Each structure stands twice: as structure tokens, then as C-alpha cells.
Length: 249
Image 1: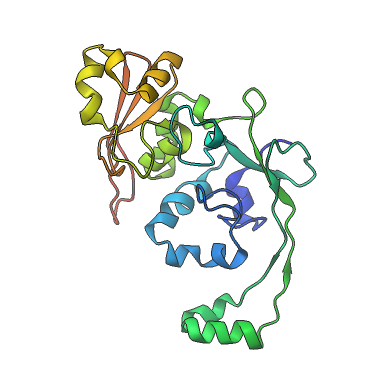
Image 2: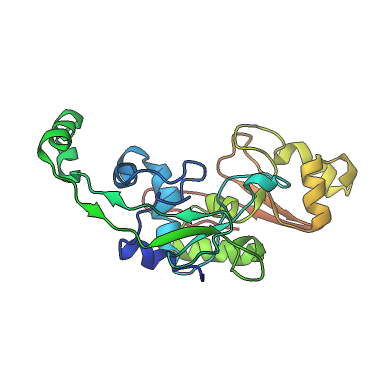
């Protein structure tokens, strides 16, 4: 039940990015959805798949969801395994799929739908993998890597650093919230007044687990990663259409 190499899986087309839990909450999408995701998801697809999962030449387990510290329901990390593995720890097999006339999509939605419904004979696409929730001590979890190792890995892949950190660690705020962000807690944290911090951050500090605190209330660009009471990593995430997403930390 060893986790499989991400990059190899996609290159050999044993699975498309999105057929598992790559889209962080939009799980197990259809073959059609995964095929056309690069076009309708835009930069988000690059952020999730193109610059991260498809460049992961390893078998580390990332987060299955964006989640806050203490959210046990969504805190699992995951990977693909061979379908022969039965110990999925709450995961499931990736279902076989049916092909779609991807060539017809370039001529517009109406033509694609006509070809798909009346002219195209779909072919069965067999899948031989499952996905599982990983276990500490048995699998390689990204959350167990020190922040500098995670950031160096992201830089080596030219990934969107702020996305990779959130795929590795717990967050201070939920995706649909604007608080707590760094400006709200900076003074108390730097002064050592930890009892004034939000409970979610207090819990991570006491557990000495890395927690991502957004600088931007909307959750984009820069971050701070806190580890315990004194360790702070300053993340400056900059993406450019020419130089890519090489980030500084």
C-alpha cells in the first residue's frame, strides 16, 4: 500500500489530475471535467495541478482539503496507491471512465455536444489505482516536513508557494473568512502575549505544529508560518507570467 509517485502517475495517464482529491473539496470529478479543467479553471488549474501535483516527483501526502488547525474532519492527507491495496483508511477506488471527444471542444460547446451525443462512440478507460488517507509513521506526510524543506521543494518545482504551504499545513482562518490574519495577531504574538491569540493559533503553538497565517485577509499572496512561540517564516509569494512562481522565503 505504498504511495505512488505523483509525476509518474500523470505522465503514464494512470489517472488525470482531478480524478482523486486534487481539487481540494471537489472530489472525484468526471473524466470530462478532468480533461477540460485546464481550460475552464485557468490559473487555478496551474496552481493545483500544473505547478504542484504534476511536478511532484515523489510520493509525499498533501492535504486533502484546505482546513484550519483542529478540524479533524478535513485534516487528512492523501495519496494514490495501486488498486490491489485494500487498506485505504477511508479512501476509495478510482472508477473506470469513458472517453470524451476532446478534439471537438475546440469548435465550440454546441458542436462538441452534438458530436458527443450523436457521432462519438466512447471508449472504456480502465483505472488501476485507488486513493487513500495517509498515516503518520507509515507514509510520508508533508505536514511532518519542516517549513524550510517544504518551501525549498516548492521553489525547486517553481510551484505557487502559498498554495504548497496550505497543502502541507493547517491554516489559521477558513477559506471563506477574512480573520484571523497577520495584522490582527502580529503585536500579541511578537510580544509573547499568546493568551490573547485566537484559540486556533494558541492550539497550534502549544502543539508546536506549523500553522499558516495569511497576510492578506482574502487569503492570497503573502503569509507567515508560525511554529511554536518563536519560529516565524515570512512568505513572499510572487507569480509572474514570465518568470513563473519562484517565491522567496
